Length: 139
Image (cartoon, rainbow, N blue to C red):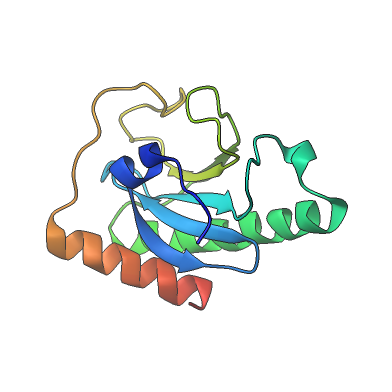
């Protein structure tokens, strides 16, 4: 297992592993939201990945987008727009957020980061969300 920044452990739940990335469900019930964390030590920037891994990351982002749409549909949070971001200003480990957005979500049309407090999932809804994401990703 490669090291995962503790911030991810505190704010998300493991979904599984794709060829390159460890996938986590962000535990904010306001948005269908997956985080992709490329496995590797000391990865901070996209440029730290070689060309093959960068291409693989794009493929996995697209797969995660499909899964976020499925997750949104399953949870009654239809996705109108996907937001994809690799910020890393606070959590420096390379990661990519894939967030499902809709016109009636709490932060629309602004960014989700720093908007209000995360809303926890109920345990059964969280389990269902993880299962939905796994199924959509083929895990």
